[in-house]
Amino acid sequence: MNAGPQSRRGRAGMPVAVIGGGWAGCAAAWALSSRGIPVVLHEAAGVLGGRARRVERAGLPIDNGQHLLVGAYEATRTLLRTVHGGRVDPGLDRQRLEVVPFARDAAAVRLRTLHLPPPWNIAAGLALAKGLGLGERVAALRWLKALRESEYERPGAESVDAMLASLPSRVARGVFEPLALAALNTPTDRASAQVFAHLLGRIAHGPGAADFLLPVFDLSELLPEPAARRVEARGGEIRLRSAAVVASASDQGVDIHAGGGTWRAAAAIVAVGPHQLAHVFAPGVAAQPDVADAIEATAAMRYESAATVYLGLRERVRLPSRIARLDDAPGQWIFDRHDALERAPDAAAARALRGLVAVVISAAGAHDDLDAKALSGRVQAQLKRLKPAFPVAVWSQVIVERRATFACEPGLRRPRTSAIGPRLRLAGDYLDPNLPATIEAAVASGEAAGRAVAHSLAG
Ligand SMILES: Cc1cc2nc3c(=O)[nH]c(=O)nc-3n(C[C@H](O)[C@H](O)[C@H](O)COP(=O)(O)OP(=O)(O)OC[C@H]3O[C@@H](n4cnc5c(N)ncnc54)[C@H](O)[C@@H]3O)c2cc1C
Image 1 (cartoon, helix red, strand yellow):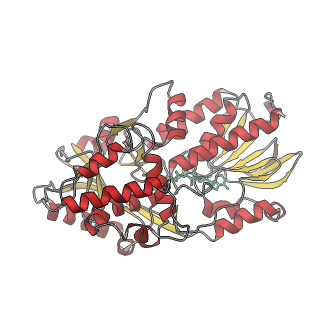
Image 2: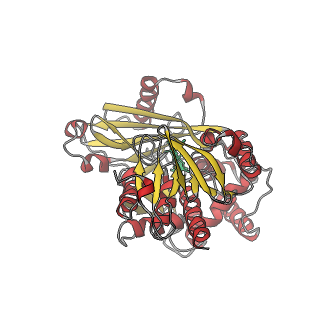
Image 3: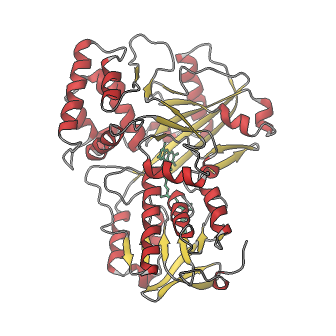
């Protein structure tokens, strides 16, 4: 750890405080320090990454939850490239958007987008999809065309289910519902059609935008930790296990209270999760109108869980694709995470295992009532039912994030501004009204906050 914040004076004088070391906070810290502004980043937990972070089990670095990025994550991909010395999509395995069933099933829908300019990549994938009749494929293409012609706009109050109602049910159930559930982490009967339509618009825009990008680094090592190393190298400081509070904020600066002391920052970026926002401000700051509005907006948000069941196997399994579709009873998707074993060959778990898969269950549901052992048992029984030859798991870890994301519901109100004070900004995955809670939303908001603070200090 470096010397105290008061000892460093960069171009902007006092350091800027970043509160929260998730992807938004780390992106903000990177944006500031790469403009020569020293940063003191406070993170309440012992590891950086927030809701997209590394956890260790039996010495094995796995993720707190299986994540999937897409080619349309422009802000994230650009930042990762800069952080990793110009490498394109570092730590990410790229493959085409696919809905491929885990088990052979003639009735199941099988879709693979093609390497064509959008929207033809998705249109051709739909036109050639297996498990759909000609009429169903034509209806799907017409529906996509109409969506494109509407410029991916849907009524603000509409649910995804209502948006998909005009599609043949096998197209809705086999293709768009699972994609919407995974992307919005909200059951489709109460998920926002508007946000889903925007996402479809983004992935239909530009070559490779629809591709899946699968992390093959642990999530903390993908962005937060290299970003933090750079922050320290540029005269900044990372304070782990340091819960901070904004004690006062004015156009003179921001007082940060943490670890029993208070220090004066030139400005502060508050990059905590929406459910944590109300606890970050002292009462006098919380009463300022834009801060109060943000607290009110986040207080009205509801949350969805996300469960990841890791299963260790004595043999390497070959899935039909690195990500394959299950039948939702209860697992929704299965990922090959063999990469985690390769990264830590000396971990106790890695020495005993040859294969590792992660089964994902997005959003709240009946599975939330099961304890870890029961949920793992259900998932293992599901895999056996779908593919009787699938090997028995010899190791299992269940990670349930109860507040994985805000529920992305129709008409959800977001804070009216992220500039909540003259020297105080918000960053986080909940700010962009067109996006669900994603890494991309977090990174884009963090960068924007960092840029804006740097600009205001220069002015
Ligand atoms: C299981 C799971 C699966 C997911 N899958 C995907 C996916 O496939 N694709 C995708 O794009 N997104 C996915 N997400 C969502 C994505 O992880 C989040 O949108 C993103 O990580 C949010 O980043 P953030 O920085 O805005 O907030 P957070 O990650 O919540 O960061 C906030 C940080 O602030 C810290 N903090 C809080 N209060 C204080 C305080 N007073 N002082 C100091 N620090 C404080 C917290 O400890 C935390 O580290 C998933 C999330 C989960 C949980």
